[in-house]
Picture 1 (cartoon, rainbow, N blue to C red):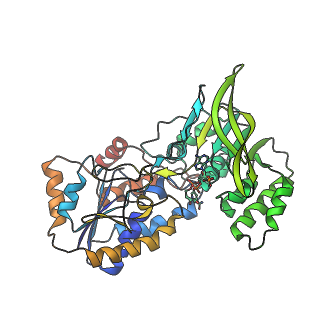
Picture 2 (picture 1 turned 180 degrees about the vertical axis):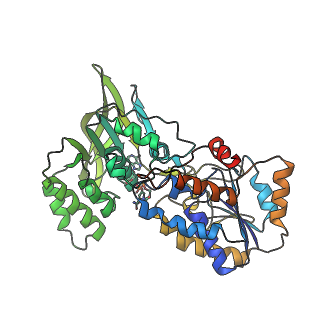
Length: 430
Ligand code: NAP
């Protein structure tokens, strides 16, 4: 069987894993639009969460299997049409993730910059698409919108000192910029209540370990205690609420703060007397429903990061659902011999390992549905590259780059990522 996989992040490599388990002789060609592989693990997972990044070891094992090929810096839909892949391979699996930010409409009549978390996270992680972002931390107040783990990642990265990034793979340019920070307040804004927050407990608790910042919770403790009295309260919610209550008891000398605000819908940024403010429309809970109120709150704001979830990058020839959140599909089947797995196929939620079961089910489905009549797919794609003068990086190229990144990292870092294709090509030519 000859398979093309679009993308090289977690859902792509769990799909590779399942093919190698179910049908070890499958020939798999992985196409990645960025030069380097591993998508969300390399460019999304926070640089100080190195344990989570260890999954790269497993993915690398699959990458170097003889019947797996890697073509980096090749964008399907641009460098090669999806139809071309569909014609050459028995099946194509779209595992390109959800690398774009969901839009938040905030009326902005100020100079305040509003970045999406894909941009901001991509910047500190050396994603070539976002490496030129240059956020300015020479300011007092940063607002992060969203109550998920990505909001916590962004807040933690802004808050940490150089020492707290020891043995991480944060980009040196990001660390330099963060080191010059004069930020005093990082606001984390949720439109609903602490009970509705999507944080997971270990990530939330990390906010209490920050060297320079103290977590503060702007929510009535009595209301949180009432939540703890609910019968059959979800354990995850219980732990989050307990952590938020604990934050209220922390006494440190830290002047800098991470301030959690709830029941707040951001509406616009205004400038009053030279100061920029984010206007929050305050919500209230009535009969377990969140409803808006007439109250507003304004918080001084110099930079806004929205961390409200992700959408796919459209691919020519594929239909997305109306908000571009994922590609339209039925249990992973898009059309003809084209399938999809991971965040490209549904909501962008879950941890890296959450992609495993879906990939396994999809691979079984592909094996049962697809007729294997395409021959010499790999030779055909190489011929296509050559005929159309398409340059690409192979897994052997990546092996060299990987080694260079690890060897050139100074002792404080686990790797020194090469960002763009020019710098990668320069190293490969040496
Ligand atoms: P998420 O967990 O879905 O959180 C998104 C947040 O944005 C929610 O609080 C949501 O509020 C809010 N939101 C959505 N639309 C909004 C709007 N229009 N206005 C205001 N707020 C809005 O997404 P995420 O933080 O991007 O994370 C994606 C997935 O990756 C999650 O499953 C997450 O757990 C996972 N992740 C895990 C880790 C880790 O394990 N360390 C790290 C990072 C990410 P509502 O609930 O009200 O919709």
